[in-house]
Image (tube, rainbow, N blue to C red; front, side, top):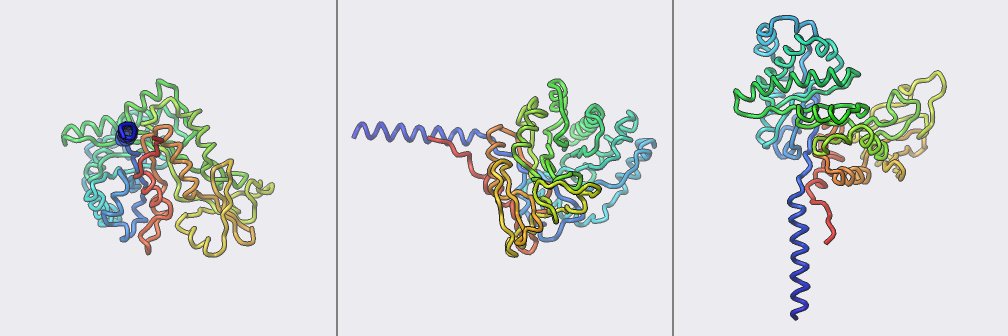
Amino acid sequence: MIIKSIILAAACLSLLSCREKAAEEPALIHATYSVLSRIVPEELFPERQQDYDFHYLQAMPYWRPEEFDAPLAEILRAKVDTHRFERQATLDAYLDVVHKAGRQVYLSWSGGRFIGIATDPARRAKFARYTACFARHHGFDGLELDWEGTVTKELHMALIGEMRTALDSLGALDGRHYGLTTALNSEHNYTQAEADSLSAILDWVNIMYYDMGGGYWARRGTHNTPLPDIQANYESNWSRFDPKKIHIGLASYGYRYDGILPGEEVPEGRKMSEYAQDFFVRDMPALLEAGWTESWDEAAQCPYYFAPDSSAFVTADNERSLDAKLAWIREKGFGGIFWWEYHCDFIPEQARHVLMDYVVGRISQPETTSP
């Protein structure tokens, strides 16, 4: 009896230790991008929005770089004080719902016009002040700079440095922190000093780990998010950052290819855009009902989906491939995950997401730890 009691006590202590370890493990920050023009009424309730700690809303108003040659007061009066969104009522409802859910919304600024701002110090400072005031005026909790183009990392650093200064000045007035993040394509590469400088400015960095293969620009139709390619890219380009400063992008979309096979090169003189098109994961249930079949690619840790007559195929994540990605994300200790993007995965009539709801359940579960 004494021996059994000792064994039972040891087992309880081991289990308690595992639970404490799981409790100490910080939860992944879960975020998603949404586009104002795509928001539908079925999204606007707190129970749906609370699944995401942060929401990135792409609702950037139109602007031209030369507009920032005007005096700052004139810019703020014309582009902040009197500005209204085309879907202002929808925006207000969206912000209200997310805030009632206890979550935050960052205004995402994207596009290829930043070169005309970032290269001019005077424009850059006024633009940063404008973006901060604009976000505050409309009730956002921070800003996100979606750096899609090929502008140099030095100019990117200069612009977000100005944005951080502008947000901090407003935060001091309001007694709060306004967040600042950036989304970068995976091909950026930083020295240790550059990684440290970028980390000091930003709350975190979102790496767009989608379009890793295939797409309209490719010569071959391949997987959108092959895990080995993502892992190799991280080790090569991003491992100098504290993992907690890195958030990994997940895709709720993929590509459909008609008339070519996986890995097949398009004929000479033809473009991949003649064969490829966007595929939203919300359309996957309909394909499966129509007889499409799944084939697992062990090397890529991703599936293919084939038409019944093999004339077309789709590459997109599924639950199995997401499990593999989440295992790697937890192993590396990254700070969070984010999705591009909310609407690609959402089935309004069912009020559910095909993949994102699955991940909500997975990240709410503690890591499995052996006793």
